[in-house]
Amino acid sequence: MTTVLKPVLASRPHPTCRHGHLRKSSPASTRAVARTLTLFVLLSAGPIALGSSLADEIRASRSETRTRNGRTSRSYAGEVTAILQHSRIRADSAAVTAEEQAYHFYKNVQFQDDRYTLFADRLTFDSHTRITRLSGGVRLADEARTLSAREVTYRQAASTVNAKGDVRIALAGGGHVRANRWFRSVSGDSSVGSGSVRYRNGENGTLTIESPALTAYEGGDSLRFTNGSSLAQGAWASHSASTTILRDAGRVELEGEPSLTRTGREAYTIRATASMAVLELANEVLSVVNLLGSADLTVSRKESAATIQADTCALKVDGDQVSLIEAQGNVRIHIGSNEAGKSSVNGGSSLISFKDGEPDHIRVDKEGSLLHASSDSSLVIDIDGYGLTLDLSGSDLKTVRIDSAGLCRLGGNQPTHLSGDRVFLLFEERKLVRAEIEGHVKGHVRESGVDR
Picture 1 (spheres, rainbow, N blue to C red):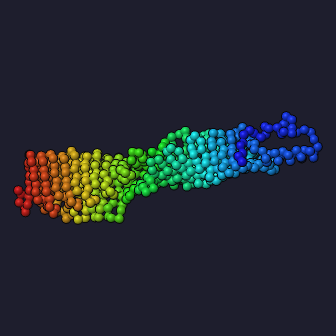
Picture 2 (picture 1 turned 45 degrees about the vertical axis):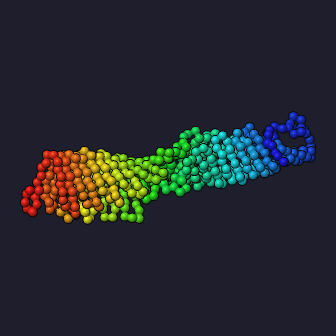
């Protein structure tokens, strides 16, 4: 049997009464009429009076109406379908109470309007406020995301969705967000998550971001994590005041004095700080790190370390290691090891390449200077010039080139003073073994107490 809910019961006059009023009668006849009216309500396929905001229609295989202590309710079972103010609801069973102006749906509930489709174990629809509350395994789907939570409140008049309890949002294009609470305004262009927010770029993704709060902009392509955030990707990790990921662009922005570290099982560590950092991803893997404003980073391996300070630095990442650093502005480079000694390079825009975690080539554009001292002080170098280029091996100095205006002062066991337009120096076992100078050559060498 199909039950159809249409007009309001209270507006129908009793068939035994003219103009909808009971005729004056004895108490006994009044009780008889009341029993007849109760029986009519139980058998009637008509609706319960809930006011002007009643459902347009509700259908079910079975229904039962009861009146108790002045309260009238109706229950429905079997393939329940309701149309409530342009919203369609399906469920296994339902119940409605006139005084509450609310509909309750149970088991295998599906709610649908022109914005969302929702699934839940239980649903309550308030016909007066147009607020829909869902609980028990709630799922919501739209074009940009799929949301699941323990509870969801959907306010149709205000066009807002409020979810709480183990909230999980699957984003279009892969990736998902977990949070304790989630709020979305349909009329706005953003959603807000709070309470232990965690993002991951896919079920097997290696990029994760955590924070207390998140703002997701329209479509979920831009996610901004605030109130202190942390990021992890492979051996890399960062901490910053806020983190913004632009998913389509493969770009992550760290703001608020971020710190970035790379650690692993092997003795290879990178630590970096800056005013802001921008990470570039290739196939969801970190490929470039841009340090913007007061960049300071240290690359350490075994007993050697290289520190670069500059206005900005761009790090190219291969796997979990840095292969190239491009530094801009006022650049200062310090390289040292207990065995080889220490080198300091100052200048403008510089390029530093790495091999096996250690710098093996440095190029300084325009004017630059080099200070080097071996661990045993047998070799001390002070060099200035334009277009300074160094080749190193495990912090040991191998070659030095100067494109123009070279000035070299060597101390230690080989006191030497050389200058020229172009300079090339070759070192072996921490000793100068060859010097080539071109243009305006000047030199002074002191060896075995003799000036040459």
